[in-house]
Structure formats: structure tokens, C-alpha cells
View 1 (cartoon, rainbow, N blue to C red):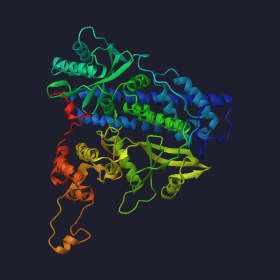
View 2: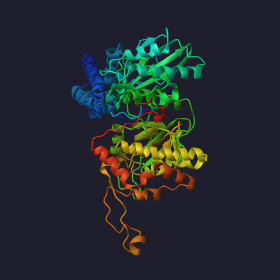
View 3: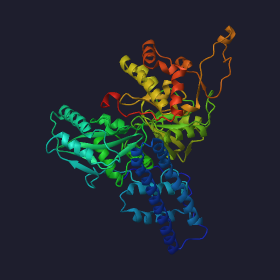
View 4: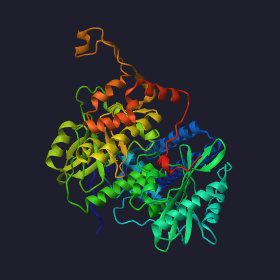
Length: 595
């Protein structure tokens, strides 16, 4: 029996046109509408792939600013194409635009039109995006949408080969050299022989450590190159019988040509490259499911939704997350609870203990001293969505009109949501309808982590908190609130930002030194005795807001005392204004090969 689905609530999909549709007219409209939507999806994919293909040109020409602009442009095209086809469908269908039986017929025709596509799953998600907007669907309409909550199978990449295989006939060095020779990136290697020597030595050592032998059956390398920011990545897997290790070769285009920066040969290292805190790759994927299946073979703990998102298909990533959530709800019985950690002034945050996601709903009103608005908050989440997250900002997915059974909510949580977020959360026919929310991967709140972990782990987290602030500054981002409650710790011990209601561009801030008080009265005054602008920040004061026990305060001061100086922040601003794009790698400096 298939899992149950949340019911739809209040959508107008049953409104019949004033003049009944004849059977022939129904078929005619269904064919026209389905063809229009299928053509629009083809337009989206063609545009998406065209922008994606530019990544190789940007990398070869070292056009980093243009590459950043391409990333923003590519993120926007889905919404633009959907908006156009929704407007066109409403005109095409006229008074019948909200007639449910017609859309059932449209879905049937569309299914036949896209049935043979290599990206069928993306085509179905696109249709759902269109119909949900045309019909203003709340909850789920399995009769009208493409919905599947049962088990799914991802191919491994072998069914439709998307990789090249390399067998070790003589030495590991010869295999690595053949791999590097197999890619045309439009730029010559600085010293390919040196790089092949380094990679081969590291690979042999890693295999001996993992398998007690440097022998392997074959190395399978994806033919597509993964581009992000200033790097290109060759992705593959090393196979020995039923064992698999990832192999990732990050390539850098420097002043003397192309070079291999390191080789990553462990699952946790590969996971960092595909982290939910980093921007999406530009990679050609003619067979998206096969590519995702290959990636999951080397990243078995990574959710499929995140892998689709990582290769740029964030809308389908949302679809997979949605299906996974409701499949989980149908196979669990715990209740949504208030999320652990300090309550925020802007968001009501809850989670399901058995599910690795937090749900964030914007409150109706914000407590003092917050002066921001709902629109401001949404704009900041959009800023983070479009910006380079440099491994320090959690990816947030935006959803509208989710519907849940009332009994899945703990009473204290539901009471809170209906009180502080009544504009977004309503009870309709015994179900909880949430008009708008964000989802994020659940991570350990840093304020709790510092209180609950042993001293060494807490000290390491404080140091990495400083690293996170520096990385964000390098990406032209100022978190706004530097409070520990706005940051979290990933399962790999990495500190990341997850609260964005005060995020802004670093270059929009004015960093100032605190003026010296002239009188005792000025010194003890409750309010500043000097003029303070809206964007003024006094780094000296940041230390005051970050309460830490002496050992942790000493660790932060020792490792990142520069954060409390005006000079650090102004120097970062100067670098951005000079057009510098700072290198931030998804692996530690200790992993990098010598220059």
C-alpha cells in the first residue's frame, strides 16, 4: 500500500468553466497546454545547460567575476521560465484554467511527451511547479501532480555510462597520467608529470592504509568536470571488488597554468566538497539520475536531495526532500517539537526528533530591538541563496503551503506557532497548514555545544568559529549578529552560520573605533554619547557580546584577536573593493600539495 498523503486545503482546482467543455475541446486544450509546458521545460533545460557549459570557458580564461554572475543567473532561470508558462497557461485555458478534470488530462498528455527523456524526474518536478501556481494548490494533489512516496532506485552510473574506466596495467602513476590526459579544460598543465607523481603516491598510500594493498580493479572517473568558484574538480571512485573509495582531484588555474591542488580519498573529505554549506556546482548532466547515483556510491550518507541540489537542480532537490519527509512521516510516529537552543526573535524553529531537518517560520512580529521586516528577512535568505556560501552558511530551502496532520505537533509547539506566527500557520479541517517556511539541515547549536562538550572540543569549536567569521568576511559577508546562538556545528566539527535575518554585505558596513569618552558622565551613560549610524559597527564591542569562560576566551583571543580590531575589517573591505576574489578551499591547507 502506498504511503498516505496530506490532503489539499482550499485550492480552487474543482471550479468548472461557465461553459461545459466538450470531449474534443478538452483533448485539444490538454494537448496544447501539455505541449506548452513541455516546451517551456525544454527551454529551461537548454538555458540551464548553456550557462553551465560556460563554466569551462570562465575557468580557462580566469574570468572569476563572470563565473559568479553566471551562478546568479542560473539560479534565477527556473522561476522566470515557470512564471512565463504559468501566465501563458492561464491565457491559453481561459475560464477552464482552474478546472481539475482538464488538468488531469493535461498531466496524462504531458507524461507521454516526457516519458523518454533522460531527465524525466526533473520534467515531472517542473510540471508540478506550474500546476501548483496555476491552481494555487495547498498540500498535495496526487490526482493532478506527479507524486511518488514509495521506494526509489538510483542507477549507479554503469547502466548509462557517464564515466571512463582506467585499469592498472603497470603502475598507479601511469593510471593517474592517463586520467589527467583524459580531460580538456582549455589550459595546459604547469607540470603534469609532477602532479601525477604526487597523486599516485598519495593514492598508493591511502589504499594501503584502507585496504592493506595498493592494488585496485579499476578507477572510474566521471567524464563531466565539476566547476565551482575558482576550482575545477575531477570526480571518481576507486573500486576493488565490493569496496569503493572516492577520488577527487581539485584543479586550480594559476599564473603558470593548471595544477592539481590535492587528492581527496576519503568519504568525509568528499562530503566536505559536496557540503550543504557550499554553492552549487556547474556540471553537465545529460543523465541527472545516473550522475546522482554515481555520487551517492561515494557519498552514501549524503541525502539524495542534497546531491541533486549540489549539481544545480535545487528545485528537484526540494521535491526529493518533500517526498522523503512525507515518506518518513508515514513511517514514524514522533511529534514535531520546538527546536533546542535559544529562541530567536525573528523565527519560530521546530524539528522532528527522528528527522535531520529544522523548519523555520517567520514570526508575525519581532521583539525589540529588531527593526527588520518579513520582506527584509526573506531578502536576506535570498541573498544567501544567491551568494557564495564558502562552506560557512547552511543551504536553506523555501517551501509554501505545506500541510501536516495536527496530531504530529506537540501541543506546546502548536500553541506557540499559532500565537507568534498566526499569519503563516493555520488550522484547516484538523490539519496544520504552513503558508511559508524554510528548511535547513539540523546541526548542533554552537551555544549549546560550547556548554555541553568537553573543553578540547569546545576550544576547537571556538577557534573554528573565528575561522568561520574570517571566511565569511572573505566572501564579503558580515553575519550581523555574531552571537553563538546563530551558529552551529556540523557532524564533522565545522562551525557554520544558519541564522540570516541580520546578514549583509561586508562592504555595506562602516567599521569604526570607539571614541574616547571626554567626561565621566559620558563614560557611564546608558546610551552612546556620540552619533551612531545605521551601519556602524565597533569591533571592540564584539568581545563584550560574546560571553565565554576564561579558557575559551583565551583561545579565541589567541587565534582570532584580529576580529576585534577595526584594521582587520577595513583591510577585508579594501580587498573586496579592489576586486579580489579570495581563495577558500573545501579542504584544509595541510591537504594541499606544495606550490
